Length: 316
Image (cartoon, rainbow, N blue to C red):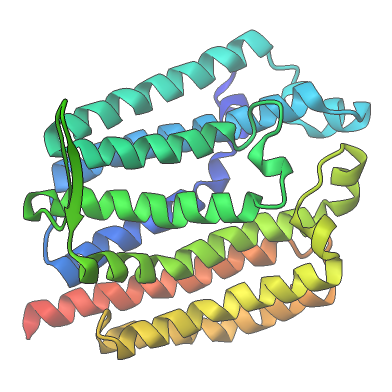
């Protein structure tokens, strides 16, 4: 398999969905918790990217195996289109998952059992998102699973790795008992700060499913837009996007953020016309990219707001 074939199989261009929760979590843990362990964070980053690539490869492999349309199987799916060896694809998947597992177990030994629980939950959803007799992606809750796993899962794990020594979130486990303890305020802050990430990541899946609605039905894939109807699904797309700004505003009022976070509202200059373009027409080759541009624009400004906050805290 060539390097290009590998990158196409794992859809390396889509990894922004993993990168933003990680980057924003690193900035948030510095601005809110004032704690950072760069070694563990960097180690986790490589494991996270490996697992993300594995789940994408599983998705393409399962779509290839279960495709009902020969046109899709051999003209659109990367495995059939590039005539990739199925055996090689499976070996790559197991290799990536194996590496991610080593990273996760190593970090869990160093930081505590709670990381193992969170990591296993994310891995379970990631693998069975497209694998198994009834993949999660073929259910009407695919957007929820993708948004929560990446938007909250990656975000929370990154913060945990940088605050484990403060025991803001901690799991005590032995043969006789277990207990999960932590700060309610800290937990609520983490969940609230992840809401914009959950919404913008879920919107990519939602936009994709809206654009692919007819093709998905032909392949017996009944996603959320099938049950909502295209019109209501587009309304939901708008609601998720603009609720991200509401979450930031409420978080600022509640003291989770400081004033530089308001820089995120500059993204409306781009997000509004992009959202309007997708609302007008839902064409995969023409307007699906608007959901990705919205994620990049909004979360880029989100990260900028936290970075300016960090600099402001450093000089004040």
